[in-house]
Image 1 (cartoon, each protein chain N blue to C red):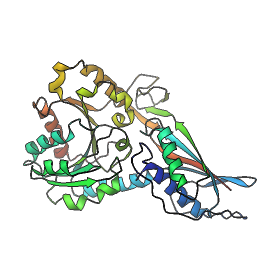
Image 2: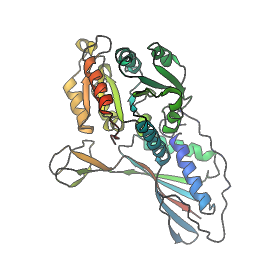
Image 3: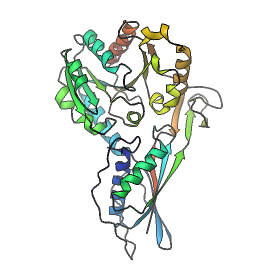
Image 4: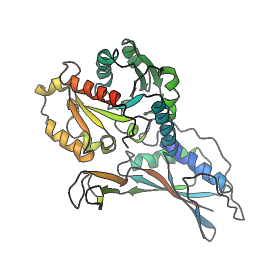
Length: 265
Length: 110
């Protein structure tokens, strides 16, 4: 079971754990740990304040540095399943693929269906099948950089696994986080998934062509998004009708042109 | 890597460096904005412990509050609601000081 949503079986190598009659203390050479020992009878406390995601964050920092050295801007696109990530990317690649050399890493639990769709654009696309894992992590993504990023690449798009929960916690080394939320999902999702939306630099409210058929308030949804991430850019668009799609493309162009290499977190 | 596995891997590393004492308790803190559900994590770790040398260890998870710092008035606010707005001046120009992390606070061993 994944520790957050129950999607992966844990495999753990066995370690001998045995008690000692004497106290043997030695401190490892790890800069981010603080070892303080308190003794009470036969038990003691080992104070750590250890960030569980430190390993992933270290990999993410390495990824970001790797991309910065090559002048590549990376975006991490996240959403629930069916919000329109792949359709958005199909249209995006068709519009900007000739202007900026773009590479794509796609994450899914199973199949390479999305990668095959996006490969039709002619861009370098690679699929990561995560099996039972419901999110990408920095180490996994970084291992594919050499396979998909060339000397001419300006933009790397990472299409994360459809999941509004776990991907929020994992920095992949991206420069910007883009979260999709289709108008069919309702206005309450930002409040229900605050970790995801509070970390978003851009929120795309997709499938806006369906608005005439819905009881939906863009203003309410925007207000809720901005209560969590006041600085986020919100774009209401439709990949199928093309409504406001130019705003999204303009954003990407600004990002690439400015070579935005500063982390948003 | 699943978070439960990450917790146990980190615990194993620490115990190995500490002379492999018997693990009694794992104390974690989960930030309210971490995206991690406490109950799901508790379940995942319990399941992972069953397949580890630490199956008798207890797990305690506390919630790390959301504390922000206002860039406008320089005050800090502890938020009970997920509305990133300074409680002193209503500015939204804030940074998050705590509430996003998953930490191993301490281990109890013998």
